[in-house]
Amino acid sequence: MSERAREDELLRRARAGDRQAFGELLALHLPGVRAFLFRMGARSDDLDDLAQEVFVAVIRGLKDFRGAGCFSTWTLGIAVNVLRKAQRRRPELLEIARPEVDPAPGPLDVAARAEECGRLARALRLLSPPLREAFVLCDVQGVGAAEAARILEAPEGTVRRRAHDARERLRALLAAREVTP
Amino acid sequence: MNERDDLLEREIREFAAVSPPPERPGLRADLLAEFDRGARVARVSGRWRRLTAPAAAAVLLFAAVRLILVPAEPPRAGETAAERLAALTAELDEIAAGVARLRLAQARAAAAAPAADLQPAGEPRETESDPFLRAYAALGSDPALLRLASARAFETVDAAQAARRYHELLDQYGESPAAAVARARLDSLHR
Image (cartoon, rainbow over all chains, first blue to last red; front, side, top):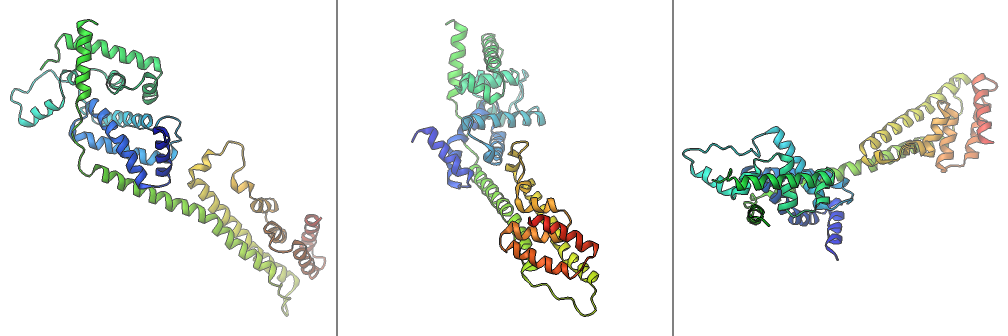
C-alpha cells in the first residue's frame, strides 16, 4: 500500500471514530507541525499549546476534510491560521527581534537564546510574517511552491516572490552581521 | 555561488537540523482524549438525527392506523350528527397536530445535520420529497382526507376499504354541508 493510500485509509478510519487511526495520523503529522511552529519562532512554552490548538482544529474539521489535498498540506494550513490568530491575540508571541540585549541575562534567558539556534533564527524574527511563512515553508521545510501556495492560500507567484524577498533580506542581514550575537 | 549565498545556505542547513524541544508529556494523550470526546459527540448527534424523524413518524403512523382500523363508534344515544362529526374532526385534528410535530422534528434534524446543507440548491429537501408529508401538505386541514391519505401513503391499510368506511360514516350525517364537502373530496381523491 502506498504512503498516500495508507494515509487515506487512516483518514477514513479516523473519520469513522477510530482512535488508533487518529493516533497514527498524530504520530505522522504532529512532528511536522511542531517543527513548523518552532521554526516560525514559537518558544517552547507556547509551542505545544499551539500544536494542541492546531490538532483540536484538525479533530473538529476531520469530517469535512474531503482529501482534496494532502493531509499534511491541510494540517499546515491550519497551523498557519492558528499562528496568525495567536499573533493577533499576543503580538509578542513571535516577537520581532529586539536589538537591545539584557545586560545581565539570567539562566532562563540564556537557555531561551540557545533555543533560538543561531543567527538565522534571530534574522527570521526581523522579517514580516508573510515573508517568514514563505521562507520557512519553502526553504527550511522543503515544501514546493505550489503546495506552500495552498497552505498559505496565496497565489503561487506571490509565495515565490515572498520567499525570494525573504532570502534577499536574510542574505543582507547575515552579511551585515546585524544579527550577530 | 557567491559568499552571501553560501552563508545563507549554510545557515539554513544548520537551522533545519535543529529539532524542536521535546513534546510536552501528555500532549498526545490530551489530543486523543479530545478525539474521543469529538467522536462521542458525533455518535450521539448522529444517533439523535437517525432516531428523531422515524420515531415521530412511527408515533404518527400508530395514531393514524389506529384511527382507521378501529371501527368507528356508533353514534351514542342522544348524540346528534353534528356532535359526532365534531368529535371525529377533533380526533382527526390530533393527527394534524402530530403531522406538525413530525415536520418540526424533521426540520430540527435537518438543521442539526451539516450534510443537509450540502444538498444542491433547488433540490427538494427530505421533508418536501417525503410522499407522506407531501400528501398532508396538499390536503391541508381537511381531516377526512387527511385520514384517507395516511392510509394510502403508508400502504398499511386498504385505502378502498378506508374510503368505504368513510362513505358509510358520512352517510350517517345525511346532507349536512360539511358532510357533502367531505364526500365530494373523498370521491375526487378516490377516483
